[in-house]
Amino acid sequence: MALILPGSGASASINLESIGQASSFASSAFASPSVSPTQTYKRLITADRIRLAAAESLNLDLTELPVPTIDLVDQTGLIRVELTGPSPTDAQLRAEAILQAFQSELTLLRNDELKMREQSSVSAIDDYRTSVIATRVDIDRLQQETGFLSKDQFTAQVRENDALRVLTENAKVRLLEKTAYVKALEETLGLPAQTAARVLNLYSDNSYLTFSKDASDKAAVLAEMRSIYGSQHPRVVEALAQYTLAQKSLVSIAVALTGLSKSEILNLEMSQKSDRTDLLADLVRNEAARQGASAEFETLHKRCLEERLKLEKIAPMAAQLEDLQRDFRVSEAVFTSAIARGQSSKVDVYASYPLVQVLEAPSLPVKPSSPRRMLTIAVGVAATLCVIFSLTLGWARFGIINWLIARREERRA
Image (cartoon, rainbow, N blue to C red; front, side, top):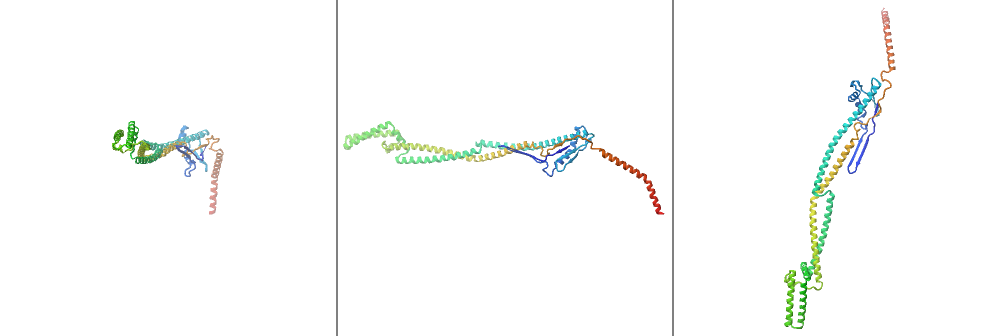
């Protein structure tokens, strides 16, 4: 029979998106100059374990099964195997048994190699799995502490804090504008915004308006009397007394309604004429707007400070979370790649023991390898001639010896 080892290798590569890459490569059986696969298989075919397995399949003793004759063809991957037997059929059966035992042994060796590889890869995969789980636990802990699922959320909060700081600055500018405007109105009117609000409330009270109208009418009567009579005239004195009483009543009502002191009421410009009322209303409106702007600024400023302190506190945690997530992605890629390599290595069964194919199956001999008839006849003829020649020499030996002795005697004489 004849076996052949293909000389080319095989390779395969798999890329899984977002998971990893797995590749397998089986080099050529003749790639290494220091190792000859044909010599390896030659020793394996002639090994006792192969012969023993073949002998057991044939119900023979090991001593009854001869060692196969191996012939390696130079510069090729051919292995020629010959076995002898008492008959052509026995020789063929022995060759088939050797071939079957050889292929079974190769299968066992390859499976044992894959098993050992799988054990080593399982150990490495367990280490990778442990690393991935530990990193995942750290990530979950940080996510619970910070409330962030990723670094992008921290970045978004930083952007929100920057936007909040801009809003706070704008609110501060609006507050300064309102404060300056209110202060200018207070200086113009000569009273604070709170007093202006009370004055406006006073202007809207019906009783005050009634007394104010009465005081105005009596002031007009007093002015008319003074223009006609002297200051000591009874009508002037009476008009002055009525006006004074009306004015006191008006002040009393103003004090009761506004809560201001009598002196503050007397110092106020109580007139409802001209644009003073509009200025008072404008002052009150802008004071309310200023208070709203102040509350907005304080709220935004407080919130901005709280957010900034929170960001400063969790910034190291967010950086650590980013590092852990990067480590997790790397560990996960290594883990999945290790699994893929472990699975793909099962396909590479010819890495250490190259593929061998049966080029010629065990054949049935058409003639015996020994003895050879012509050779036997030639040997018989040669042996017969040797015997005849030996007998002839033995028969002629006595005469030759006598002739030699006679010649010696003659020479002596």
